Image 1 (cartoon, rainbow, N blue to C red):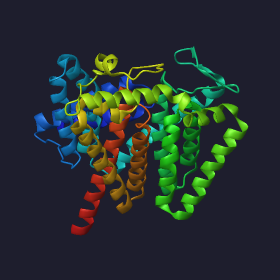
Image 2: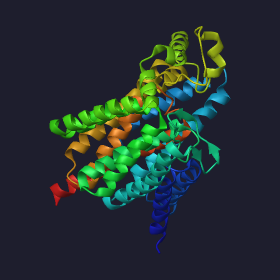
Image 3: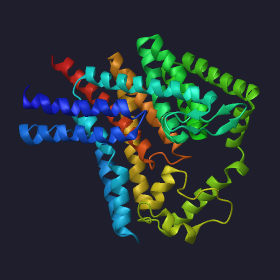
Image 4: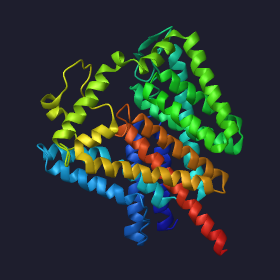
Length: 403
């Protein structure tokens, strides 16, 4: 085997290992990024074939990282804050490995099939957990939610982590079911939907409430009407027949049950008002919380429960603007390219990634997803898949025109 193909094979193995691992465990997923990077590095150093490609999203990404580093370096705990940036931002390497290394549609589809296969196992396990009440892997009982139901966590110990991953499985499997009309994609779409419901993660429920109707109406008005009506029927039917679901949905609109979150948001705004330009530095929320906290009830104070406010507190208004610009560029890239894709595979991948990202961006209003390491891995994986599909579509279009 040639050295070039060996290095490329190493990178591809790392990418596939990541796709297989992330619905189940973040530990091998981290090793997978390292394997992929070593393959990419070897290809560049040994064979002088540096697979590097520019994207418009890199401009706000560089600004965001640069301003975050500046904020951290000038903060009260520069060493701690700079270390936190490294710890939370390095998952972006999976995006780079996907975007720089995948140059054919067949392999991109293979990556998604591996991800969905592993996601299917996680979804089946989670649906079982809702009634079984036990996390078998760690042999711990799950949180009872009433009506004989338990909170599903999949293979992760935290329901929010699992819910965000299951949401991505849902949007990718749904996109593939529309493009390829295969029963197993439809079945996985239903399973992952039930898994998200069984997680009782309100932030991801709200992501579904926004992203599913938009997904359907973009395809056609008729489909949008049908799926939105079906979603309403499922929500109303669930609330009428399952008291636990009714209470959980009702809690979304009850300020009394969201007092902690509202107080955390007010505190975050107050911190930002005192530090509008540079913020207080990454992961210094705990350091300054007592100085700015709003009086009231708190059942947790670990973070603002909002990714945008987390960024605002950490790196000020410039950091937040760069963060919003970054994901705005990626999301627009996804929607624009998915509309123009001629290949069923690229179209399925493009729509699935775009709506997974939209779901994460909606959920980030109510929870800490980007700031949670495991979900940050997922976030950058989705972004990398989206950008890769867009790149391959451009390449295929250029080839068709010149050929």
